[in-house]
Length: 362
Image 1 (tube, one colour):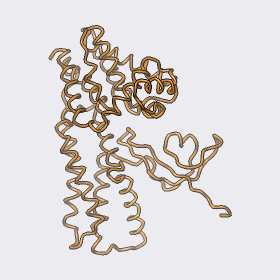
Image 2 (cartoon, helix red, strand yellow):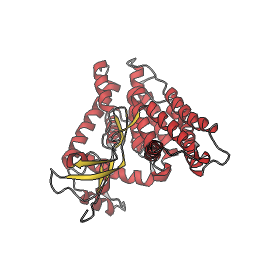
Image 3 (cartoon, helix red, strand yellow):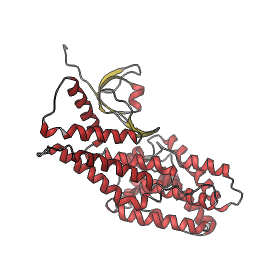
Image 4 (cartoon, one colour):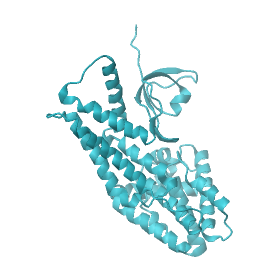
């Protein structure tokens, strides 16, 4: 497969997926594109200036929020991001159209592309700059194909551009990611099936709720399996991260956080000698099975403590709710609202803490 054929196939595939999945946020993506163009043109531009310019053209968007969420509020960090993105885009173009691109250069490119904890818009910026270069040098305009790509699809598209060309150059072999998804699906299925023999005649509504949520997760995996099977090893952590972020989202009732709370409560109750009534005995079994599946797959809590003293430096690497720190040496007494989660060394979500307010006189 030739270079332009690979690019065309990857872009067509990503464009088709994004049209199916991103319908509800099409308008938001198009507006964020406008902000991205402005940042690429001048990373130092003030968000208020960009916002005013967009309003003149009928585009209303909170540029401060986009900077905070997708780039950085710090203009120097935005400059650094654009420079790095330009460098990666140049290397990607050379990877496609230079015959003397070595395997060592490919490994370096792969390391830069497959990185985590990056700015959300970074990969789309790289795609945009890469396609601008393609338009300039080859007179081929594919920019319209990435217009509706959100964050996750931009990341997958960029990954495929690197992987598929690496396969063409014989730098890497294909990897069947479907096996990992099957393991995940089997694990959830085992949790549900294992609970069948432990149900009482009048199963508690709580168990039904938990079972229904896990079944929703299985349905979601089945729905996306065809696409997931095309993903490569380097994308595995990104996909696992996205999957478990969804699992711990509001839509799924913060399932990871709630299960670990339930698990700790069950352990405390058992230590106190409490015996579960027959009609709810299936609840702790389901929770234990599910948490075993999570941990066997490599998902773990970042901070399992219930209460702790939080420093300013620790607060910067977490979500903190409470009175602001007045001095760098300050410490806050906090309770853990969410322990935060990681997949091996990849952070899925940071811990979330809430300040414990001491009543006067206590």
